[in-house]
Image 1 (spheres, helix red, strand yellow):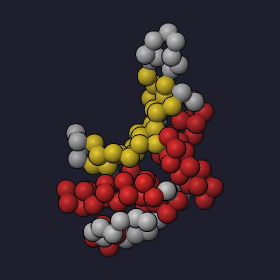
Image 2: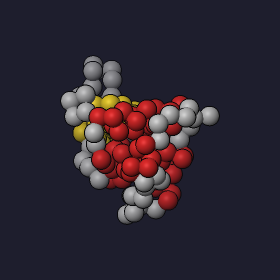
Image 3: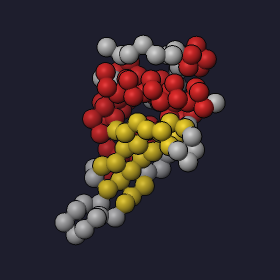
Image 4: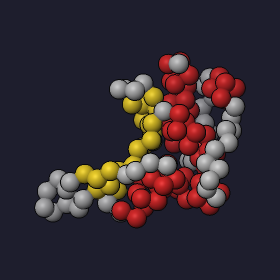
Length: 126
């Protein structure tokens, strides 16, 4: 069960928040599944804002996530000859917040708790 914390961000931003209107419900469901397993939800200190990040070796998956995020994806060179090249997609700030609102009900308990803590932190930072 998700811990009950400050829900001021829910009232302030209107939860659940519409968004991702250019994508089907299937795309949002698919994105939630990828981010549940492979995504990272964190606080980016340099911008004092929440961030969603994905880092994988599967180019097709990262490219699809980047399209949903509405961004370009990045690449990182292999750490050694034995490693594969990795691809990254990151979204920060208001865009990350909108995505979090849309995928929140689809996430597992641990991810929902993390998203709630990030939204509460954002509420206190703004």
